[in-house]
Image (tube, rainbow, N blue to C red; front, side):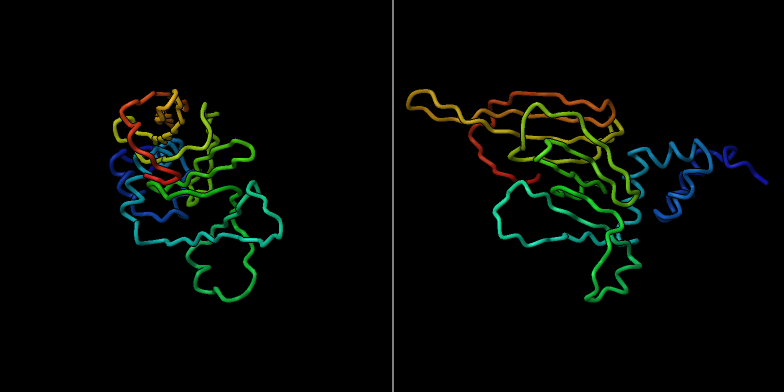
Length: 206
């Protein structure tokens, strides 16, 4: 019987790209090489594109009506795989993968989860049920943001644009600051971009 680790890397990649997410999760325990391959951002991005119309998932927003006005009350989302969709009716759905916070995405298969009351940010892969807590960002909630896969660094980038009001006498302008998170080194970079002052965007994703 052929040892899995003796299979050429290129052939192993082609084989794993044909598998569903459920099968990939089982394969992670077979060998270290396969585990590292499945975890790589480049493989995740390629697998997502090749299975874009398969293995559908449903993300449900669990809403609880309250008579109090509490803007910090967290949202809750749940993930349900495709087989669950066939049996949906009016029954109460038990969460398979609860997500507490504000959900944004998907961006190349990832969701950005906010917990503003705790100033926490997560990257969440609902297909593999894995999350990564990001280090603290210097600035608060951004006015515009975006996330995606960067093939040059073989990692994910998260971009925040934060606008600050500047009042100097009778003049009024916006000071723009950009925060760039890179998953390959798990850190933030901070840039001041003055040429963006003429634009004003509020809480939109890019």
